Image (cartoon, rainbow, N blue to C red):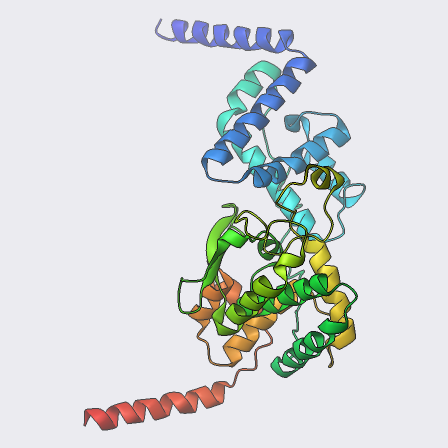
Length: 370
């Protein structure tokens, strides 16, 4: 007799589930899909991610679902395989790995918060289409980035600066030169440097001043602000650029919201309104300028430069000059020392010499103690 109410209750639940499933439509599924996307973005927003990062998170989900015209819980592992092996296959393995991981992250959210409702209303079990067989692995797709030597880098910048006075567009040429040299000195990324405003420079901080950048977040945490280092050379360079060249661009160089490195071209809408702040130069523009300059002035086995290679050169040359690994990590803004070690793959170390130096230090310490 005790089992009868339990069986009756279970029958009622199954009946309600069947009725909910029978009355649900494709429109209801799509509406819930949009609701889950919105709530997923809200949850990640609460976690501190930027709007741009939120858009990147959901884009792969929308991309695959639009291709098959289905809601995500109707996707199968085979669907994902066919898409990323065929029409959706990106040019770089890192891009595919990033997209698939974002799809898997969204499904983790669905399983946590909506699995019961989706099963009850639509009779579909929520299970990520990313399984052990199609989950991409980090295989070192970036390859070994070999920066030019410290001597070749110094000669490159010297030759480039000597050529500045005869440049067709002197302010633009100086801007490109200063951006490249500052990237090498401070180790900042191209996107970080392009976003720096005049009000982000703090001349009084530290020994030689620092500037604020919106750095890349670690492990999906979103962009993080940090102070980048100028050192004496970078301070002198920036001071010269701001005093002598920055005012040549067509905006107000006294506005703290103006970009440190503005674009030479003002959009027609901005020019017509005579707005005081010009748009910042784009990272792709910076990359092209550095590539052209390296082809003209760089000598040695490394034929072309790009901003991230200058970041590697910054880490490698400072480490070879004696900067400790921890300080190189702080300089680059890395959260994990293992990331910094990857930047030093071409650093010229001498373990035998370091072993001898360590032995000599131990002998001197014992001598002083005795």
